[in-house]
Length: 195
Image 1: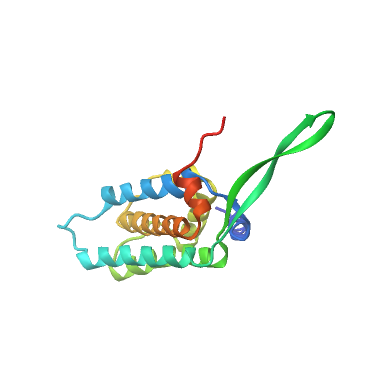
Image 2 (image 1 turned 30 degrees about the vertical axis):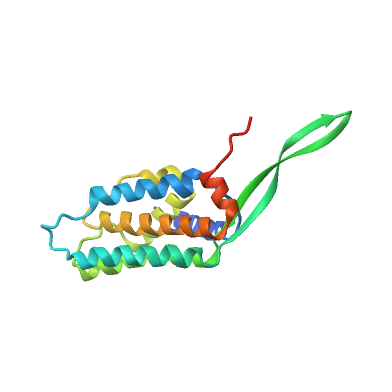
């Protein structure tokens, strides 16, 4: 990928973390569940050279990152304009309530920590990483911006680390949001169907 496209993607991703985004089940529930499922598929067998304590350490790192990312998140209940209607000859704005979240700097630091932890652990375990660090940052930024890319297969000896760090950190992040805000809890767990 040309360097200017890489820079544009990263700048766009970074600026998006300082804007509010709508809370939705796909991002905050489906992706963590899918990632955790992928952990079970890619986790190394006991016959590999990877010690159990390393696997446990990756789980702990993922959980710590999720807690850190959610520690300063901002949540608000916003009115979003969905259109206009005419009532008694007068045009009225139609609003829809949405729960919005802004990750901010801590989300970005946690996101970078996931990638750095993978590379550091792979180096310490003498595992081959099939991408450069810059490629990893760009690919993860794209996955964060375009949700269906989160479901793409990960391959190689570090796939289990990717899924574990992403799955555990995103699950813990979601659980912390639910703990922090009854609005998020209602939106994600008790969503009412609108008629």
